[in-house]
Length: 33
Image (cartoon, rainbow, N blue to C red; front, side, top):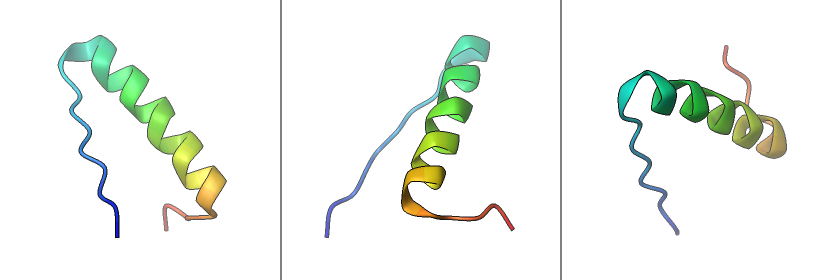
């Protein structure tokens, strides 16, 4: 099993990180519910 370690720093990092996780969730069929 692989693990992803992802750090988000600062306002810009948080915006980029949010888009990153949205795309990962969409690719893997994960709902936010």
